[in-house]
Amino acid sequence: MPVILVSSDSQEFKVDKEVAERSILIKNMLEDVGESDSPIPLPNVTATVLTKVIEYCEHHRNDPVQVPDETDDPRKRSNDIEEWDMKFMQVDQEMLFEIILAANYLDIKPLLDVGCKTVANIIKGKTPEEIRKAFNIVNDFTPEEEAQIKKENEWAEDR
Amino acid sequence: MPSLHPLDFPEILSAVGAYLLPGSLASCVRVSRHWHQTLLSLVWCYVRLEHFSPVAPEAQYLHKNRYFVRSLVVGGDVAEELTFLRFPTLRTLTLLSLNSGYAAAMVQAHPSLVHLEISGGRPTSYDVATLEAVMRLPRLKSLSANLSLDEATVDLFWAVCTRIERLRLHDAIFRVEGHLDSMMFSNIRELVLHNDSIYNHRYPRKDLEIMQRCPKLETLSWRGCWESGQEFFHLAAAGTWPYLENLTMAPTQTGDVKQALAFQQLKRISFLKIGVFGPRSFQAIRPHFATLKTLYLTKYGLATSAMMQELLSSCPVLEELIGDSIHADDIAHGQPWIRTRLRHLVLCINFDPSTIDEYQPLIFKQFSRLTRLEHLDVCWDRVRKPDDSDLSLVRHSSRVTFPPSIDLGLGKGLDLPLHSSCDMFDSSDWLRRYPRRQRTIYGRSK
Image (cartoon, helix red, strand yellow):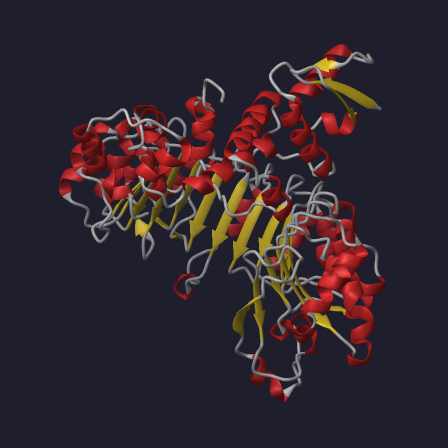
């Protein structure tokens, strides 16, 4: 049973219901609407990004549904990205963040996780200045403020 | 360029932060005010205070950030000024080898505690004050301790057991029984009972008594139970623990048949790590293939090659399989392995040398389905060879990292322990000898 998704720039995408339902947002919408053929508008997602998202959902259509892990240690691993996912995420930074935003909006947790892990891997091992350069972030601390923050949190640096 | 960068959204930045270690987070909080505000809590989430550790925060900063600390490990000989600190949202506290007076004070001062671990070298006699303080923790869900209980404290301990969900006892000593009567520990879902010390055998063992009072038990890890194993399976077969789905047990004297009767009573099996495993047990866990995540068999079992093949082709959520051995022809001619979440596979692959060339491509085809494989062990050491005097040759393995040209998803972080010292390892030799051909095969099978 195909479902029609419409991107913000009015492009239509026909996908299997099973694939579309990897997005919890879409799944809930379909449950509310019932047996209707009307296309689902996604005003927050452009066609290029939606293409990538659908590609991900197609590849992972048979994955078992993830059960939220209730362990208390919030530090998770970021070095266990599947090879296909890694290749899938080899896009420019702008697209990477568009995918993350789309995964967040559409509520596709596995894709959001992979995106966040990818960004985390970019951050790893970098100094604050290198991080700012990587993401074009403006430093709004005075030198004294930054030095104070460094002092307070220095103990965590070696861990 | 979007006007608002995704990392400006605190929920996205926090989600990224969850995958960063403290070292990276310490750099992140210096990046900008927004990053500082969003990620500082993650830096201070987990704190370790030990005398020998050079990486402890200064007391004044600990105090300043005390609301962020959720998990604290306090070792012995901590600077005194640090012991007066209080953490209002602390969830997890681990006290290592501290005197009991301090333990009581720390526990009393942190009513937000959910998980408490008090460990040390030898079982410590808790004074009444500490156990009373534990009893008064309104949110306590799990307790891990090595205890020595006497008349003054044993009943307090049983009272704690009626409230918690997870109990871990390491080398516990019960000098007296106390008043168990018809007490039930209906909240306990997870029980870890490890008895490794050889000095405790003169004290009555309370393991089975405790277990019998946990009707909602889901996870059990039991070590040091050789003599009581049979009784456990007898009770399990009578339906004492209908919710049990994760079981780790050191080998007992129980046979395959009795064990199978116990498995039949379980509604669900996720995690199984046991000593004995034969055809009856296999039959009994077949209905649970859909939920089986981990199966860990030692080499004392009677698991056959056909069983291993069936497991690999029938269990969709299997993540770890540590088995004995499998025959190459079973793999080659068997059902396709499921594209599983299998991360960890230990199996010795037995080859008949004359069939290597014929079976290799088929075996690689099976392997290629394991896209998430991280650890593969085809070491001969796992094979039972009780009469083989050459067993000494198989003792030492050296780790060889697989060349990245192999396109099985194995190149990334795969540990492949191989015996480099002995010639008779045909089973692992083929992986070394045929990488080029393998790539061609993988390409052809697409």
